[in-house]
Every structure is written in C-alpha cells, then in structure tokens.
Length: 112
Image (cartoon, rainbow, N blue to C red; front, side, top):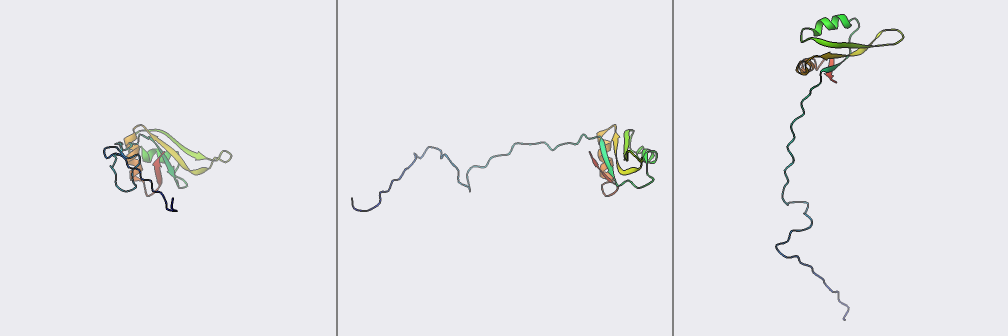
C-alpha cells in the first residue's frame, strides 16, 4: 500500500442543483411587497403641559382643529394636582395626525 493518501472526489451531475448556496452570488430573492402602515390612531399623548393650561383652556385651544371626543389630564389622586401630561381624542384619525405633526417640537404630542 505504500504510505500514500487515498483521494476521494465526488462530483454531481452538471444538470443537478446544488443543495447549498455560497455566501456570495446565487440568485437574488425578491422580498414580499409590504404596504406602509397607515396610522389610524385618534388618541394623542400630550406631555409637558404647563401649569395653568388645564382642561377648559386645552379644550378651547384644540377645538380649532376638530371636535374633541375626550380630553383627560392625569392628576394626583390625593391632591388633584396635574401630573403635566394627558390624552386627547379626536373624532377623525387624519385630524389627529395633523395635530401631531404640527406640535412635534413642543409641547410633546405624539400618536398613542
């Protein structure tokens, strides 16, 4: 036998597909088409509400955009003082999106 090494080579038929693909190359796959998500949120979070800008003033201010369904400012249960954030619900999601875009820098308003 002579001390040499035996070489074994396997070859696949030329018309068969490989059972793995190399890291580089190979056929590209198309990703499935996804529509961009459209926000249907009608509730906005309002943060950093200044002292004195409470429900009646806020209702009057945001009424210029659309009818407000609900307005809630978070308050301390014991003292009743404002926690300086709240939630504002509009009837239409498009109006809520416009208000959120208008007030992005301040006060902090974002879709909920």
